[in-house]
Image (tube, rainbow, N blue to C red; front, side, top):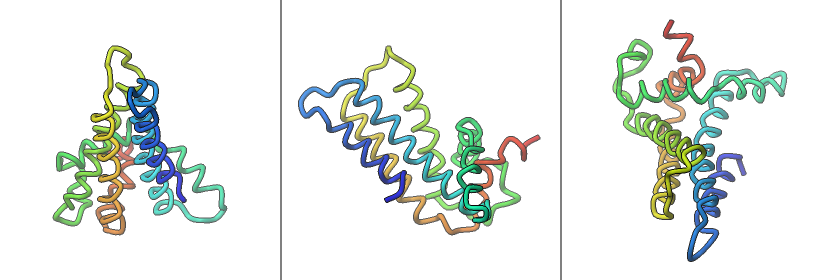
Length: 165
């Protein structure tokens, strides 16, 4: 099984771990892990599409070049249908691709809150909704991952800041 599938399974396990009174630590890690499931799925596909298979370690190294901030910026542009990439896209932009981008932004915000904002309290219902958002984004990605626009999206996740100089 792939890392992103293992991570989404782990996030569900963390959210359901304590049956009656879930600990904040479990709920916070569940949100963070759900975000990382989507993150790793996208960087894996990005490396597969953008980097040759030889030498074998090149793709693993390329995955390290994706950054959270740059990916967020690209996802913000895709989620709101900005004109940033319109010259590269084949219209119409798939709604599933926009949903993946919007989910990435939302899950990253939730992860930041879960990892750094100790004043915020999480409940199981909201955490399970976040996990479902990640799972829906992963399913939406599977519907569009082989489209020309998904290729632009993956390249933008890596090159957004360089393309917008």
